[in-house]
Amino acid sequence: MTPPPLSMADYESLARFRHGLRAFLHFSEEAARAEGVTPAQHQLLLAVKGMRPGEAPTIGEIAEWLVLRHHSAVELVDRATTAGLVFRLADPDDARCQRLHLTAVGEGTLARLSELHRGELRRLREETFAHLLSLG
Image (cartoon, rainbow, N blue to C red; front, side, top):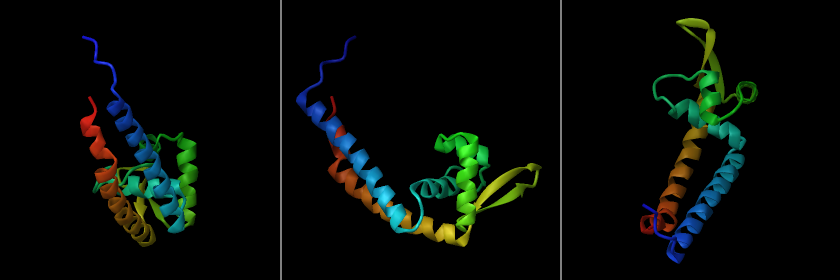
């Protein structure tokens, strides 16, 4: 069965959605910089805290989650460690494996950024994402 052709309302919904995504990414990048971290460091903090609550991720898992090559993830973690945002601990079951944890500074930074992002997502939900419901 062939889907019906797109209507002008469909194009409008898709355009608003695409604009909303780009606006959110821009907001996110600027919020991270204002907090004194790079957008990539913000993504790292969020991944360490939220990808598997209660279980500290490995650098390999972070690389996969952030769609980075392993060596790029190592460099990102090294910079975040130097900035005092994260630290590594050897896995108790496999000393060759390092698990990533947030420092108190990293936790505070992430909490402030996440509060800002939650507010922005609520705003976008009303302005942008509601249009997706009308997509045919």
